[in-house]
Length: 356
Image 1: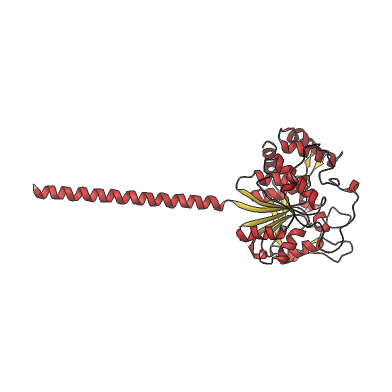
Image 2 (image 1 turned 180 degrees about the horizontal axis):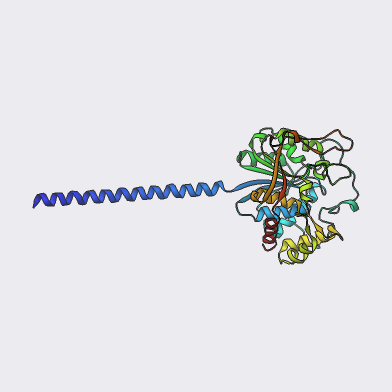
């Protein structure tokens, strides 16, 4: 009897110890899974700095990036392009205010000049988006808080963000490349610390939208474009002018205004008069900057692309600012040219934005 009790006691203790061990293992597994899930969740966040010369086209791209889950806009930097850098900042703040994000994303005023030669003189009536970059639309008393615009030490602040998130910051350039070129030269460490670069600009067949062969962003600061292409050796993805001009990616104004523009959100209330005035009587609407933002957030929408080594023409009388690709060695190099995107997918994202 005593022996039977001892055996029973032994097995009872063994069972309790086994149950305790399983409980501990279960807790450890749960912790590991939770930790792994948290780590995976953190890794899915894509941090970006967006450089703009806003422009309604820039505004669409900003709206898309800000509204896309998993994308965190660390900063917006402003460069002279459609208008001077301060006006660009005002337009950006106007958009952020409409989206209740004016105090969430820092906005920095960057370069107000191209790197070397004088900025071409353009009369206000010849500027696509008017002298203020937003078609000189009168918004009345609805003005953004300009005290939120940060005007000092822009490069140092961008450098700090990139340094704190090394190899985790994607740089998206939607205007002339002046700010990025200065960053790469003043802080050469950023050439290794920036994760990747996305650019709306340049051309791949010599078709531009200036009086000669260049696309306007590269034409507005050819030296800056040259510095970026030759000094940043990471992955550069470019959506060139010819791609933005493809028939399947050029939308029509009827759909833009009667469908997208009819959605009751404050973003549309700002962009409708801005774009309606700029676009004029043609029926074309080209959301070029939004396309490169969508290529960043939804790479599966890219249906055609090719890789090259590249350079930028600085000396040609008729071709200054043209992006030049090494076609003889297609498939090599660090520059990916986006040649086409999924039209239906782009339209779905635009509809989602309009309904935001």
